[in-house]
Image (cartoon, rainbow, N blue to C red; front, side, top):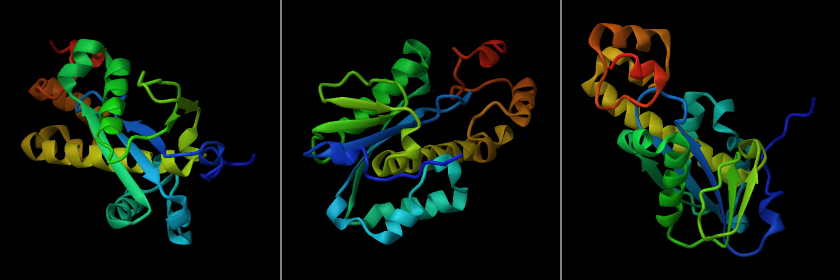
Length: 205
């Protein structure tokens, strides 16, 4: 089985400014959903970036954070982050909230893209041409970089919330429905940061 690796294969199909988009946090029971939009200047892309960037799910926490630190000051990378709150997730559902986070990320970029490459099948319904790519984070450098930024940013948010609600172990489980998270909900109830529209959380209302 050939495992795909990110490249500029999809970016090279287009001219102008191309942004890759990915999200983090659709599945958790708590916390916001976060999206990132990334523009890579291919002329400034180097071997170090090429070797480091991959689908965030394939990288360890330390490697994701190392990539994120590299992105912060790298001249080839421009990015923006958007998020949708727990309240918005509960009001409009997670699919629509994810699209909202994507639109906010794109709207916060320094340059308006001419083309969007999006991981998965969620069209953010924005007035910019879109190509949706299943498993795009494994095939496109721009999307892979976005997946790393979205994941690290969301983990940082959950770590900060963990400082206020340590009993739920969000620093460790990022709000996902682990057994320790469920047991903490049984013992302590739910917080304003739990997604009340999600069935496992709704059961505690």
